[in-house]
Image (tube, rainbow, N blue to C red; front, side):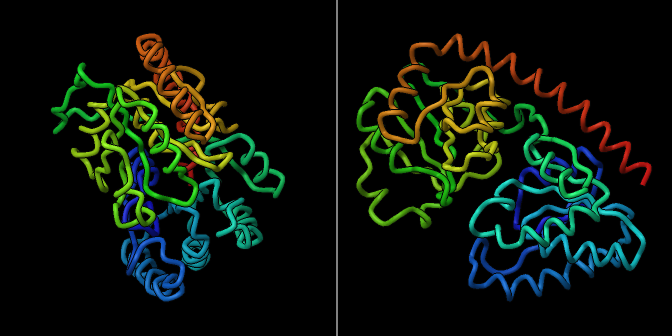
Length: 321
């Protein structure tokens, strides 16, 4: 069984499919609203126990954060003599929101059958705690064919900005960059109600806010783009949106951050999170588009082969358990 305390979470869903696990998205009330977290966590705790005790899984794949979901599963495992695998997203280890829970994360990590993280630096951290860990980035994605009918419009250089208006996503510099590039069109995803006041109203004409896109609507937008922009102020985030572009062989424009530079070694232009940096990055993609497409097409299979080898080790461990 795979469990995540969120209405949806792409990484957990992908791992559940690869593991052949039943996925349970357990969530109540509003998402990413700290003020209601204490209330919804109590409800989610009891719902998780209801699911666990009714289905009796022998191994539970649980996503961290929140660490309280892991603690809930851990208590079930102690009572039933079963095992859990903890998949820790890097911000849980260093963001201001979750840093205070690191001692609890350390305690849970040492009791997990295995800890999954997406970077070698965090694997070493878990091992320094005396916990077992492996490195698995997001599973390699295949381009979604069903329901995807859009095509690249050669008359325009369309750029998709994969964005959710999260705290680490610099959106305003993208809008300022668009003012310098009237020859390009920028499509910015994300729930419009989460945009800062005045941002949408004051954007130039070549910027379109798409709203939050789901399933076919999102994949059609990816397929019709000439390049993807995915930005973060976090040093150690691998950005699921970048993985989406990789699946569709789209050149990537990513923040110049250590984790991204180590992972996306081909078909990518790295930029500073500034208007000028982003504008220069788009211009470079325009100039080198075919070369970057060829490179990103090579990178996907290389990362997939590496991932499948490591995942087979996790799968064998789960089967033994």
